[in-house]
Each structure stands twice: as structure tokens, then as C-alpha cells.
Length: 94
Length: 426
Image: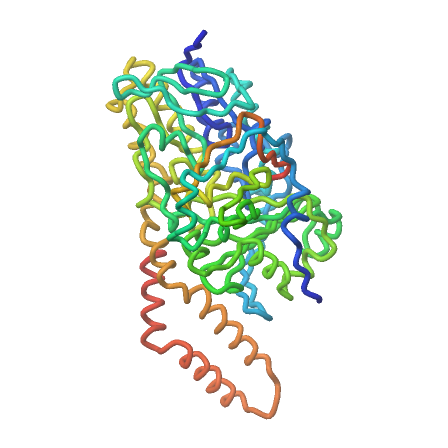
């Protein structure tokens, strides 16, 4: 059987989200990322590719987030809260 | 206007709904706040719910509840990159007396929360709690994105990430080694094809645990639903960090395993989800009561990682928390003097007894990952050699198998492993 690797974007578009205007994720102190002591592990542990390293900073695509919380545990510089009521990921199966 | 309730429960999952049901039944004025569009919208698990614990709320619930299949077979897969040894237990008694049911949480949780509503609890969806309201060290309510609500006792049932327990000062950030990151896909296949592939009848299901496919203590899981398969992996967050691997890439590797791929072949991806599981065990259960507040379910880290149980611990903790609040209401005392009763009840129940029994297991397995790598590899190697037919005599073959085994693990270490495993499990 041939190896088939599905891109994360192709997976995420199957999910149902209600996207809020405001991000529920943020970097508390962006200057810390420049000398990140954790080798930018927010990017690595995220199962939905929310974080990327672009132009010397960590960017956040919060609308892909499934609110697992892994990034917040991986790095204390990540601000994390639940999206407003009814917003964010809304599983149909779960 | 700020309303006042006997109890406000944050989170309408199994723990929160069980607490709400218990208090509403006893005549208390109860409000359940759910941040999702409806209960279950934010929830994901393997997984199964258990007959014994669920029927305490609704006898013969399987006749009406949105369940998928009842489990008749438990499978334990020991994999290498290109082989597997499969140990399984199927029993017709599971057809007569149901033990566990596969469910989709987005369908089951609303049904379960409805039981609490029918008992008199008020459920408010789409409401995110932002903080607790504290007065003289006592929790007297919560701040939500729709306004403040006051109550005698707040119950934090807001899941593994429980921001409420943190806001209340009951716990610090979760340590990475205490949580497992689970990544899961719901894969659709025609009902009949699932039954053919897993050799099961209508309504019958399997629950499977798969180890050995990764570089460490990686576990896979697989549950058959009516016309979907729940399929995923779990990795300790600290192991994931150390490995440098990406969770969804690992998952794709797992899906492409030659023993696994045919099971989900041609399936259609319906949903991709991720969630943390609090698997740290007894030592990581932090303070779960204080003046005016109790913590239940995943928020209290109540998961049995050895037996893969969680929803039953959640429901039981919810019931015990509910009972404690009912007692507190009678006494008119909502301080920790009375609420400590919840912790006591939990300690006397299977919940804390089981967690205590396996207290050392999480640390033991995370520092002895060869149970998940070396032993599956050896089992496969021995199974392979046992079946090879060539010029070798059977005594030569046995000798060869023994030397294969002892080369990988010395006799002394084998004995030590057996002893430690026995100590942990018995």
C-alpha cells in the first residue's frame, strides 16, 4: 500500500468552526520568542499548525485551533483562554 | 441583575451533568454553564462510556441514548514497523450484559445533560466563564461573557484545561509529563464494511489499544462506531517535546502502518480533533475543594490511564460532589469544613482507590519505555521465528528463539521487569 500523508489543512476543513473576530491566543511577550529557550516548541507540539515562524516572530492562525491547550503547557509566554461562548471549534462527532 | 443559584456548574460534560442531575433531583436550584454551542461541542475522547455508571442516571439507557455500538471485543495490538502480534478477548457475555458503549461525545453529551435538565437543572449554552468571584477567600460565583452569576457552591467541571481551578488558585499550570496529547480522526465507512472488517455483528463493536508503533510510549486507539471508526494516537506531551516529532505526522505514519491501513482503507475523514488527557494519576490530583468550590472529572485529573477509564470517574465524581453540596445546603455551611466531604467520599470510592493503586504506574512506564518498544519488538520476532519452516529442527529453533530473547533483554532484566510489572499491577 502506498504511503499517503494528508496535509493538515485538508483535515481541518472537515471540522466545524465558528470563528470569533478576536483571537483567544496571543504571545504575552513577543521579544521572548527571539531567544526562545524551548526551541519554539509551541510550533512543534500544536496538532493543527496554529503557530508559524515568519519574519522573526511567531504568528498565530487562531481560527485553526481546536483548543487542546498543548501550546499553553509547552510555553508560559503563550496567552490562552476559551473563545467567547459558542465560538471556536464545534465538534460534530467528538 | 445578578441571579443567585444554590450551585453553578461550569461545563456540561459527564462530570458536570452528573453533578447537576444529583443536585437538581434533591431539589436544589442549579445552573449549568456550557461554553460550546451545546454540551459535547468541545469534547473528544477515544472512547467508551460504561453501562454500570450511566445506568445510575437512566436505566436501560441504551434503548434511547445516542450510543454507537456495545463493545464485545477488546484488542491489544503489539506492533513493529511491519508486523503485529494481536491479543484479543471476545465474549458473548458482553452481548447479554453490556459493559461499555462506543459513542460520539457531540451526540452523547447533549443527551446526558438533558437528564439533568429533565431533573430541573437550567442549562445555558454558549456561555464562557472568565473568572471566579471571590469574597473573603470564598468563591461566591463566576464572571461569564454574559454577566455575573452568584452561587453557594461553584463546581468546576471545565475539563482538563480547567482555567477555573487555576483562577481559584487551586492549581498551577499542568506539568507536561502529566498530560497526554491525543489526536484523533473520525473516519466514515459503510456500516456493513465495518462489520465485515472487524468480524462483528450489527450493534457489536471493538475497542483496541495499539502499542509499539512509535519510538516511545506512544499508544494508539481504535473504536468502531455505527458507520465510523474513531482512530487516534496519544503521546505524553513531554515525550512529544523531547522526540521533536509533530503530532499529526506521527499520526499519519500510524495510519499508514501495513497492519492498520487496510482497516481504514477507503474511509472518508469526517473530523480531525485533538485533546489533552490528564494521565498523571494520583500524585497530580491537586486540591479539589475550597470554600465555595469543588472540582470534578478531568478538571480534577480523574483519569485511570492503566485501564483507559475516564467517563466513569467523571460521572462518579460529579455525583459525589453533588451529594456533598446537598449536605452542605442542609447544614447551611459551604466552607471547606463541609466541602471536604467530597474529597473523603472520593477517597472511599473506586475513583481514588484505583488512582492510588496505580499511583506509581505513570512514572514507572515513562521511565521504562522499553515495555512499549522492546517487548512488542521481541514478541513479533519470536512469533515470526516460531512460524518459519525450513531445515532447522525444532530444538534448534527453540534455541534460536531463546538467544533472540536474551540478546535483547538479559535474564536478570527480564526477571526484574516481570517483578516490577507485577508490583505495579497487583
